[in-house]
Image (cartoon, rainbow over all chains, first blue to last red; front, side):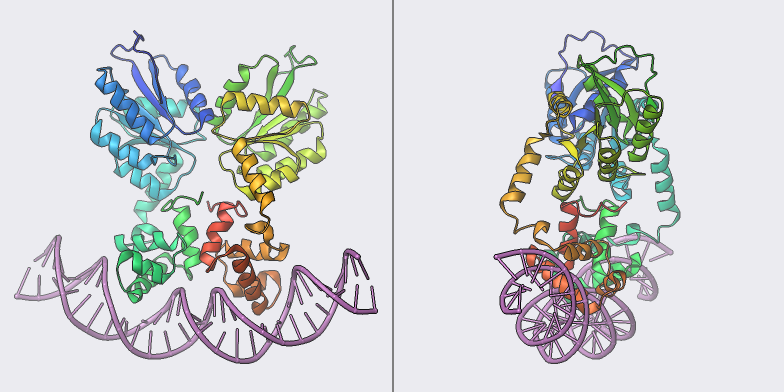
Length: 231
Length: 231
DNA sequence: ACCCGGCTACGTCATTTGTCCTGTCCGGCG
DNA sequence: CGCCGGACAGGACAAATGACGTAGCCGGGT
């Protein structure tokens, strides 16, 4: 976690403070380089994970320093997942808009992030102009979505009957466990239900997803971002 | 693909030319920012994927311009995988050292990359100093490995009897197909063998990996980088 | 009050998967 | 040459998986 010294006199009204959150130093460097080219944007801090980001905001708050207007944040970080961090920031620091900047466009994570209060979603192959647009939009209480993200989201809305969206919450629970390599028996134990019931859920979700085996379900769950890729 | 204009008079002996290959513009920007801080290093081009990188080298060659001494390259790119690109560069442009800079430390990909002629392996949470060290090492015909990568590699060498290394090549073939969600019957068809044989292979590889179901095998195959995560 | 959808559970059945053992064929190696 | 390990194959069997139908329970909406 890094906080710029409070000596910065440039934090006047009209300047957009940005907190950059990413576990990869290279990416932070690239983002900062993007932002430095923008006149009325100032990077007020960097954090390597969600926990650090929260800490950073807290310490700014107790020091009565202005909070950043925007947090530019990766998903998939150690310590604290971007989705969780987004939720907590939206809850505890409602003045801070969270813009997601991540490598993968996994529909479930996109959905989760936006549901948790994200004000934008960028993919890492975005150019400087897109990052700028997203930040200005967020600062303006608008929402900026990457084109391909928006398209995928639209597709999801159009056909709620394909994909994990069609699953009930219980079926999603089961799918997550399937995607962790658990057997029906183990799933039953974890969820405190009968093994037959677990099998029923598996059978139902396979049907809804149009799959023929739990192995394929694992792949779908990963593709949709329902479970993180194994480390 | 971007090539710096040949007007650069600074490409004197002693200067290390670097080609940056990554599909994420942000990452390229960050890397370039790193490299700009180094005195005797010059970025001679950028490419968004393996194919572009090769093209870039070709075009430099036909124009009789000096090839970069080092290519800093991501794995997991569209168009052409980093491993393939490394192999082709090592074969066709032996003067160019390839340094891998990637997010994940998947032991199988590390192994494949190094086997294909990579001269370094960095993780993306590397700081500027590590990137610099890797580039200087590569330019010097040395090999630079990230500490955690080196450790994992050492672990692999120490215990060849855990992990995918213990598998026969045929078993690896089968594992790849398992990890694609194929059934035993489909695997048999793909490999033109009997289903019983496919089952034997699956059973044997599960035993060697200490697993109890093919679903877990999927996770291991992903973790080891034997198959790319589903897009 | 009534219906519907979701969670629970069970029974039955066909398939798939995984284990163990046996055995053949072939190529490399001492 | 004999030996060994790996690919291939099959039999026998146990266990897990998945499909389909049925049914009780409960909460939310009409």
